[in-house]
Length: 84
Image 1 (cartoon, helix red, strand yellow):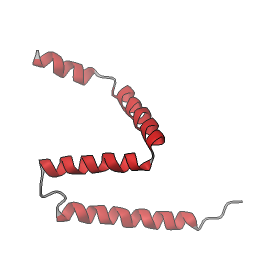
Image 2 (cartoon, rainbow, N blue to C red):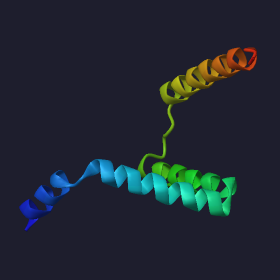
Image 3 (tube, one colour):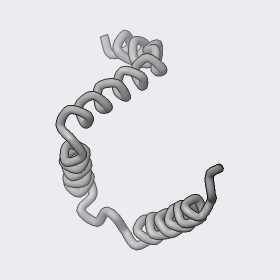
Image 4 (cartoon, one colour):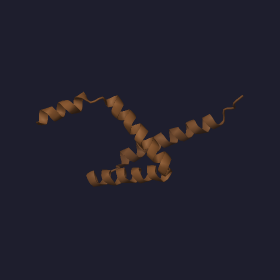
């Protein structure tokens, strides 16, 4: 029985799963607004804290900060381009 479940999981059409989730969440957030996205993110954060109360550690926070700085720089550069 466990083997069958593993085989079914491995044999799933993962592209279809991904597309289905994108459609579901896109429609849900489109209908309920950005606050729904923030609510879901908070639920995921709380779930992670339940699994690992020390999360995020200093290394994860540092990597996150570096990512946000690089994104801010890219957005700043993109904002300075002119369209014709």
